[in-house]
Image (cartoon, rainbow, N blue to C red; front, side, top):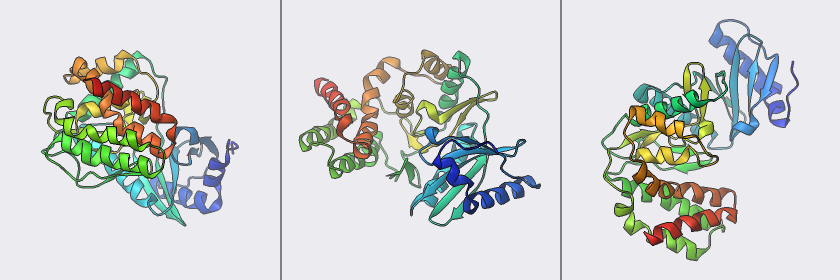
Length: 307
C-alpha cells in the first residue's frame, strides 16, 4: 500500500473507517475491493479526504464529523443530482454515505482529472451556462444547503434583491459581527446597502439554477468535460456563480468566452455588479477566518458608496 502523506489520510485508513468503505465499494462493484493505494486530497477539500484504490477501481472519500455532517453530505448529494438532472451537468457518481461514530463518510467514484488548458476553461464556462439555463419561478430552493460548514437558508422569495439580502448577505453579516471580527461601523455601512439593492442588482432576471459555490476548484477538468463538485445548489442570479469563479485566483477569459457560447452575458453590467455578489463571500471569510479580510469588504463598500 502506498503510504499516505498526512494524518487525514491515515484516519481514513483506520479499521473503523476503512472496513465499512471497503464493504460499501465491494457491494457496489459486486466483487471484493480492498484499499492498496492512497492519494491524499486534504488540500483540495474542506474535509479530510483521499482517493482510495485497489489498483483497478478508485473512489474519492471524505469524512464529515459533528452533528451537521450527515445533513451537509445529504444536501451535497441532492445538489449534485439537481445539477445533473436539471442542468445537464457532469457530476461524480455517488456510491453512498456511510454513518460512522460521530459523523459520516461520503464515498463516490473518483474522477480522473486532466491538465487544464484553454479548451478546458471553455468547457467550464459552457457547463456553467448550461446549468444557469435551467429556470424556476422563485429564487431559492425548498431545502437548505451548506457553504462549507455555514448553513445557507434557501427559503424561496419572489425577487432577487430580497433573496440576496435576506438569505445571503444578512446571515453572513450577523455571523461576522457575532464572531467579533467586523467593526460595527463597517457593519452599519453594509446595512445601508439593503435599501439600494433594487437599483444595484441591475435588471430583473429569471431565477436560474446555480452551482452556488462555483469557484474554479469546484470543477474537475476531465476527458469527458468539466465535472462539477461541492455544490450549494439553488436558484438565483446567474451572475452570482460567475462572480465566484475567480474569487480565490484569476481565471482566463476563455471561461467567460465559453459561457457566452451558450448563454448571453452583459460583461459591462456584470463587471459593475461582480463585487456586490462577492459581498457574502468576504463576510463569510471574515466570520470564519478572521478580520484580515476586512479591507476587501471595505473596498467593496467604498466602490458602491460612490455609485
